Image (cartoon, rainbow, N blue to C red; front, side):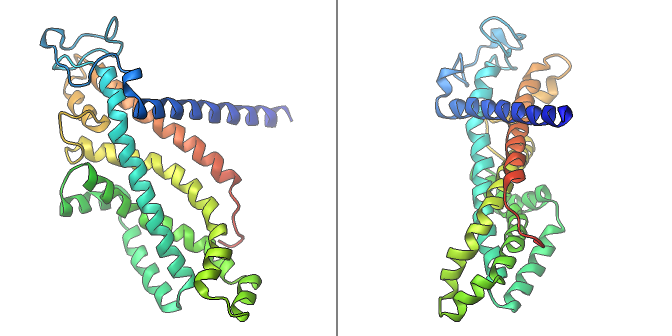
Length: 277
């Protein structure tokens, strides 16, 4: 009993801490000037590579720019990529999954075989292929990651929707002459929403990592704009002499990903799931 109570208490503490990090992130995105001590692009060559402390709590980079300020201002593009790609992937996956579950069997087979092919590629590799085709930049990276995550969301939606589509109340509604789109909206969609939101919360962390990875490769937000992945890429050259230039952006990524993952797993544990889905 004590072990179980301790585990539940630990999970509650983790969820509260995750919510605290996400609230701080929301403030950094909406009002970065409240946290950042300096403008993110202000350079001071004399103060280049200043260690953490004083007026620069996270130190400065090779151009004398305040690392804390750049981490704070870098939250907006990093989160925009993560959230935007998640929303795009989840909405597209919802449509594809519902079409596969509620549409003709031929449509289900064609869509699922196509998704199986896409699932054979790791999401980051698929996003990299899309960026190669459409070009680099923040918007293109967002679109690429969103497209790469569609198969995962579509498979989940189909698995959750099939039991509802084949349920007695859906069949009864069909016999009574209710149109299929109405059945899907009224009887199927509520069974899908909870698990989809839970998976999308976890997927946001994955999308943030993917966006940072593509920016690390120079395919994301162009310089001199602050973005966590590009800051990691710039700071890797100075790890031996100025470790803070890469460490703090990396810690920001880790904190955000862990927070959304903890929150998403908490939501997933409470999300209703159909048997056999």
